[in-house]
Amino acid sequence: MANLIPKASLAPGMVPNEWLQPLFSQSISAYMDAQPLVDPTLASRPPEIHQYHLGQALFLDTSFDGQRFRRDPAWMARNDDVDHIAVQMFVRGINNVVNGAQQFQQKRGNITAVNLAYEISAQSTESEVLTLIFPRELVQVELPLMVDAMGTLFDDNSASAQVFSDHMLSLQRNLATATTAEVAPLMQGTMGLLDSLVRYGDIASAAAQGATLRTICGFIDQHLHDPTLGVDGICQQFRCSRATLYRLFQPLGGVREHIQRRRLIACFKAIVQHQHRRIFDIALDYGFVSPSHFSNLFRGYFGITPRQAREDGNAAGIAGDLPPADGQSARDYAELMWRWGKTLANGGG
Image 1 (cartoon, rainbow, N blue to C red):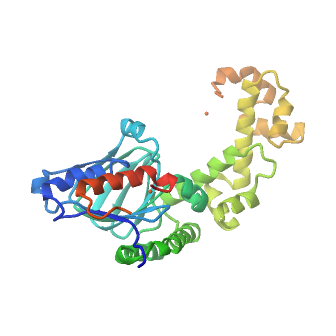
Image 2: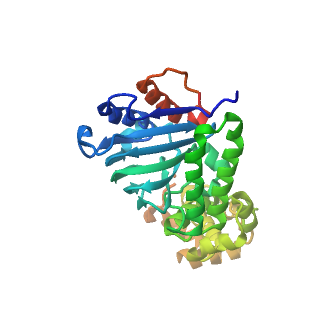
Image 3: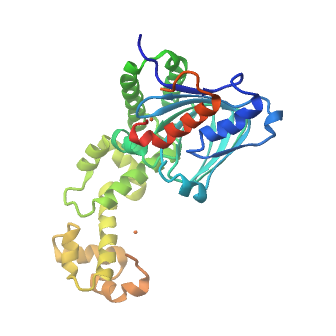
């Protein structure tokens, strides 16, 4: 007989209802603190959670009364090994979220990303939510454009949002009878669909564009010394089209112009910090092969020559940046779900 996908649940009937809220909070405490907005004994419905282990990811089907969710610096210090990306779909309810510098609302009809590498403060109404949790290491390889994702991924009620919502609802209906042999194709299909929609779908929302742009800009800053850094290499790295890349960088004046500006800024810092090095040797490090061309570009951007930057730079303040065994108790399941979350990046256990 085929093995079913590992599942852990907390639901009414397993324990007295008043126990479910603290067990619910315990089960997700690897990610964030959850506290009810009203006395659990007065809640309109006790929390319920069904968690499936998909090898490299987790799928959560949860429902709960109003909650306050929090991931502050002290919480993050205790859980610094969990910096996953959560892709969420609200079947019902509303959650007002501040994640890092992004403020957004989760509601029916939108697909959002919550980034556990950043602080979180949120407050929800009575809700039902479907969540996919991906470890950052997996996102970096399979979904590179989502490394810095926070907020709405697609325009609300767009075709892309509807297609991925339908996929999440299909996972909710079918994972209880799916087998471990089906995990790999399910994961490949899910990530492939998400990757394709993020790259080529309706990523018109400001949050989605901002996350994508931050990710690519981070890559650029890490490769400023690479003489091959350019449009083709970036498109290959992030599996996106030139048209997509050009559209993302249009507000910054273009991708080539952005790379050049970042290299000039890096040169400015290096010129100020490394007084013993020849200025043009530093320029060569960042791909500038003509002294006069470099000097003209530098003066055009900063308004001073490289030599003046060396002399006056200090004054300008430029500074060098986891199957549950049969017969487990509800408390065991809560502990199991917590452990799955903590060990997800290592493949579970």
